[in-house]
Image (tube, rainbow, N blue to C red; front, side, top):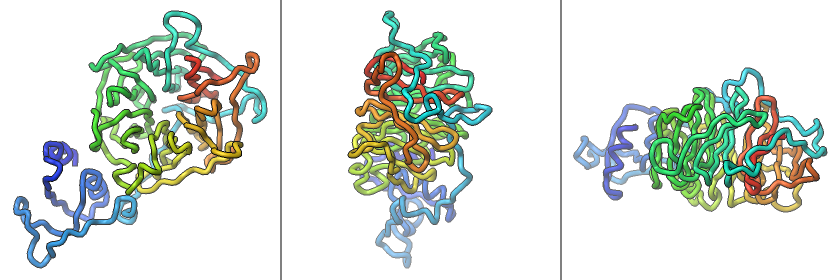
Length: 383
C-alpha cells in the first residue's frame, strides 16, 4: 500500500490506476480506500483497462468508509496514556481535593522578565522522569524544564532544515522516549531525542494522504502510533511510529464533514484507544473510534448555560478517562469524566485571584498535577 501511495502521487488527478489483491482482507481494503475510489467490478487484465466479459461494465462504488465497519477487522485496542511508560496510573487531582477550591500554583515558568522568556508558547508535554517539555512557538524552539521549574535545555532555531522549526505547536513524548513535534508552519512533523538530536521528519504542505495544511497537535499511543490534527484540511491523520500514513478521518471520508468538523485542534488517545479532539471552530469535543470508522460529539457539562466551550484548544486524558480541556476563549480549564460529566473547572487561581489568559496546551505530571500553557501571559503554570 505504501508503494501504491508513492506511485499514485505522480499520476494526473484524472488518471485511473487499477490494482488487484486477494481477499477479502479488510485492513487492505480500508488502507486502499484512503488512497482513492474503490470499485467492485473486475477491470480485466492489468493494463487492459476493460471490464471482464460477464462481470458488468458499470463500476459500482463500495459503501463510504464510515459504513464499512463489518468488513474492517477490529484488532486489539492500543491504549492512550497521559505519560508514556509511567509505572503507576496518572490520575488528575482536584485543587486541594475540592472542585470549588481556588487552585494553587505549584510553579510558574517562562515569564520571569529575562531575555530568554517564552513567546506565545502552545504545546506542552511531560515524561515519566518529571520533565516539562514546551513548544516555545514564536521563538521557534523547544525548551525543557524540571517539574520544579529548573531549566534543563533548549534546542531549535527558525528554518526548514532538520531540527529547525517554524512555529512549533503541539508535542508529545512517546514510549520510545522520542519528542514528536508538530512543526506547524513548515507543514510537517519532526521526531527528535530528548537531547534535541534529529531523528526523522514526515509530511509536507498539501491535501493528499500524509500531507498537511497547518497541522497543530499530536498524540501517541502505547504502540507509538502517531495521530495529528490537520487543521485546514479539517481532518485527523494516523501514522506509524516511522511516519507512514495509515488512515484518516475528516471531510474526504465523510460527505460534507468539514461543516461538522472545523479545524480540529488539540488531540489525545483515551485509555480504551479512541481519539478525542477539540473541534475548534464548532466549540465542542469530538470522539473518533479507534478504527477511524465513526465519530460522535462528546456532550460535556461545563457549567455554562449556553455554549459548553468557546474555541477549545489542547486536551489531555488521564488513566481513568478524565479529560482536561483548555477552554481557550472562556479563559478557563474544564475537567470532565469519560462521559462528559463535569468534575471541576477554574479560570483563576491564587496570587491574588490571578486569571488565565487564553490557555492552550495542557499536560499532566506523573503525580497528576495539571500543567497549563497560559498563552496570553507567555508562561506555563503547574497546579
